Image (cartoon, rainbow, N blue to C red; front, side):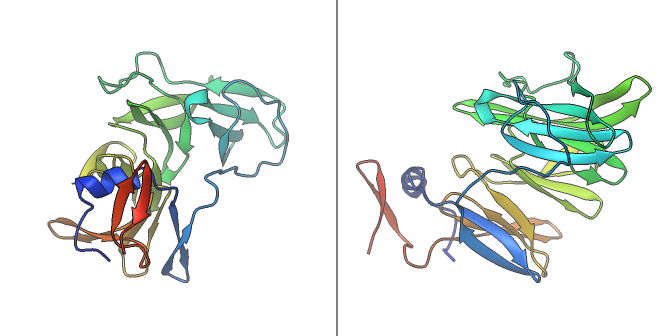
Length: 253
């Protein structure tokens, strides 16, 4: 563990690091391992034709009349689809209403699906895309109506809800500006911290209640208390200090 967040020079250096950490739980204990792939493809018991906005990472949710399937191919697109019944013979794109609110700086209004969690009684759809200098993030409720599934706005974010977990009656998730919480009807940022450039990969809660975030080069621990959240930053024991040399982030021995 280091004494505090990385300095500006350390951040510039680790922007060039190829090391990403993935955090997971084993019997309540946190494990951090180097990430080998960021691909996520939830299983589904039928095949479908690929196409525009129907490829990349896949999030799947079983619903009463079939399946909700969300796709995320980064800057190459993504979207939410409904497939009918058990075998998915029919499909239909589910899109936000064009009048749905978005952040004033959102140039994408991206429909890439980053998760389909259930919070309370609400099925949420997390949409967003951080690409180059653009940031897009929104949360919707998926609602089944007589004419089919529709999306109801819940929250406008300042970037993609990169990683998330359901924590009891709330959803916890991260954007580049910090930690957010949602009750399924609205969302607010509960802890501000600059995660720009760290590209979070994973988020878990340990048995003692702390949150751990796997990121580029660093692992971040967040501990909740009455007045907010405390941060601790972890780096590899074998490389605790770094220096940028010709676009390569090197250990300082």
